[in-house]
Image (cartoon, rainbow, N blue to C red; front, side, top):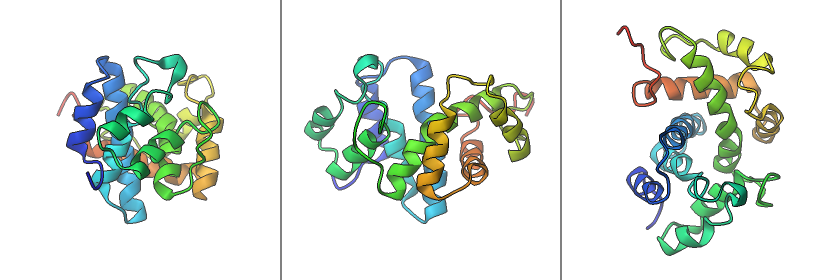
Length: 190
């Protein structure tokens, strides 16, 4: 395969991931990655595919995350650059693969950020459909809100991207709005 497609990413992910919350996380990260690709003028579907597949081994090997990813994906024909990008999101946590490209830096950043956006959107009566950056930033500043999401890591990613958290969050919110219904964040009253 020349580059990972969203169909192939879903097929591969489904061979390892059964828990709905993990599939939802994959979809959230994919939506953010598509928006980041548009920001950088890159291939949206390709970045979404990388985002969707990024936690390939997490459900089965949470304590050894990314240790069971490289060879199975290589055996499945996933290109080396795409495997490297997936491994790079664990930089300083469980891998030493430093994010170098805009794709890798974006994945490193939006993985945790998507969780805070999802949590903020879930608290709103209209889901993500009317979530504005200003409202999100209030939640971001409250360290107790979505406390399991690693804010220092997100800021480290923003620094790598040479972007402000507000700009990255705004891009990701827009990306997730595009997929609101699929992510369970649509307006229930619409």
